[in-house]
Amino acid sequence: MKRFINYWQDPIFSMMFWTDIVRSRTHALIVSAFLAAIATILQAAGGFLPGVGFFISPFATLPIVVAVCVSILGGFFAYIVAIGLLLMLQPAELFIFPFTTGLLGLVMGLSFKILKRRLPVVLLSGMSLFAGISFVALVLQFPLFGPSSPVHPMVWSAILVFSIVYSFIWMEISRFFVRRIISALKSLEA
Image 1 (cartoon, rainbow, N blue to C red):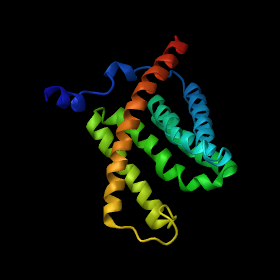
Image 2 (image 1 turned 60 degrees about the vertical axis):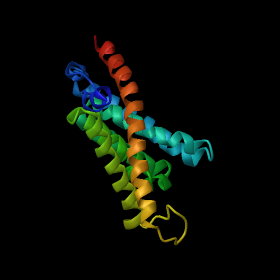
Image 3 (image 1 turned 90 degrees about the vertical axis):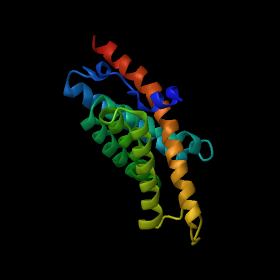
């Protein structure tokens, strides 16, 4: 039981991990722009490659998480640039990326840097994903569940649980890749 509690309370990354990721603003800008382009390509795959692309597009979360971990301002830049690129390449994805995939990456990256512990990262990321899905379904009235179908409260509960579990999975995937990518960026600078 102690091991389970420690898993959720221990820091995701050590404090020394975040020091000196990028030394110049130019380097951070280039990395952020590159990651925005990758996020755009991955998200647009759903429209360009029907079928297979829908399995690729959720991976657009990862470049945004990495961009925020490299630089918070660069992460916001990557998020906005990816939205702009999607507007030009695949406008249909603008219902999905800003409110789900991209928002999850933005909040998760911020949570990694600010909250630093697994439980708050998963809960905050899951809540933001749920809020994004709710916004798309209720405010924008995008038919997520089929045309004109009323949604039962149990469905919303299931979406909330799914959002938290999905965020947990993405936290572990992101932690794995962020550790390797940032280590590679640090070694390039040396």
